[in-house]
Length: 205
Image (cartoon, rainbow, N blue to C red; front, side, top):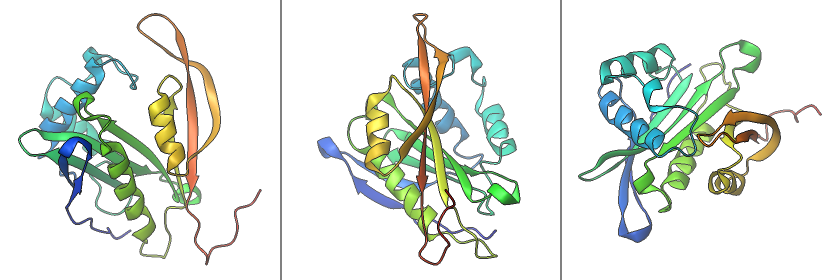
């Protein structure tokens, strides 16, 4: 699969802030991405990890990401970061496609926004750019991503509302999947977005 490049672009955000959206670079961005994930995990909302479950250093973090396929340049993955001047990486979003041929049109989406950069439109800007790449990308054999799916905690209504506003539909839930710090169990919501092409046959019911 050839890779469709994403040119860096500046986007205006609320509260007079701006961010640069660009493709992630491994291992160069490993330190910034690890710092971002630590800040999100420390906030204890919207993620399923504990601080001691993160890698201890950027090198290990980068190696794990590369091993997971996130650094691929063949179209099987696409990773973006958002940078603010003077602050470095404040958000990231990624797609990782399923590998078997019958499902390689499916990509799993992940996104993380620094707690101090939430509520200013950064998540939407990242997702719109990411989905724009999805619509533009074509594989060498003409194939493309037809379905994007994600999982989101049921106690994160702001994220659920964002995904719905972009066309994602709830497809089910895994009841009591997550156990919060206070002991309460939280459902995990599965959402999906189909990206049709007029030249493709309709999806089977």
